[in-house]
Image 1 (spheres, rainbow, N blue to C red):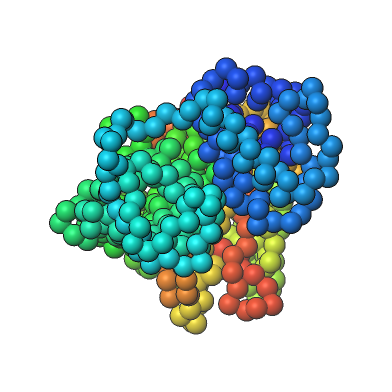
Image 2 (image 1 turned 135 degrees about the horizontal axis):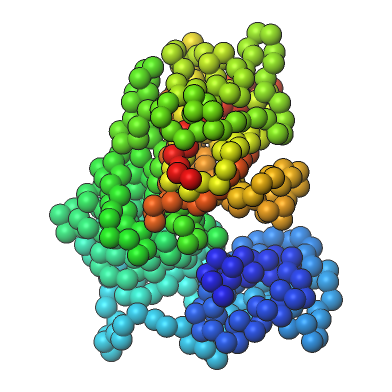
Length: 462
């Protein structure tokens, strides 16, 4: 069973959504595959840590359907069950750890400041000054804890988080979020590994996050880092203010978001400006785009331009130009469907936005917040209900406020670009692309705004 299918199956079972057939399949997979047991163990631990903080009812589907467990148990019952399952699996099938350690564990870091820390296991009740040894796994349920590595690197764990110190200048992040700073000569090259990427610091400060479904993200606060993807030799260089994410899966879909220079030239550090030479440009007559859910804003004062403007190869000419933008009505979600005319191999999708009103802080219409889906067939599936069930394939998720770590309005760029690419050279083969767009924050508390999108560029070949 491939890694992505296993993760989905485990999460469906843990959330109580697995069918009897799925539960049986998971049971057989765990019995036959040691790596699958390890994956289950990691996910069960995280869920157990989170579940103990909730007091809601949930239906539980047992792995073995021979003796069904009645539905209606509280989540803390599942948490206890999950912990017991973890203990049983760990006893029967020991985890594969790092290379053999010497008799005296090597100390590679120590705890610093701690705030409201709650650990998954009572045995992890650490205090400031306590040593951290090589290979020690830290499972923080909530709060934050600072680790000071022997190289001088400083890492802050933000709960919930599962983290392992692998050396005096390296670590492995299984789940959750950390903030790292490596500003000493000895800490140059501090490396954080995740399931899908390796982040190498070259004298900087950055944030790394790993979602339960395997998505990895890195945001550079200062300096620069190199990102290497699993199985790839080339590396991606990120500088201050740049962000990068990798979706789990065989295609290794990458998302890179950058801020522009705030001019009609739409200049970005590494990503090209809007193009009239991409496959979907309307001048070639190959592609068509339309609204399939929600409605573009039609208010007399500030109406949206037509959806076709997204394929005209141009951005806006000024920073506040509704007629040259495409945006949904206030406080409303929507969806845009692009028909490429035939099945094509897509190598890159770029989306551009630009907006800043006379109020300097009003840049909420520049935020890009959407999920991109693809479908390869003659007729697109329904966009109502569960898109995964309907047949759509999730390609990437984008929230530029999250990427830029926006804490106050001044942090938000007025001009943005999101570039979605594949590490293996292609995102996938699709005929239809679907953008499910969400509203952003609001400068007016009465409603949330929608983004002023300027251009959608799709680079592809039949």
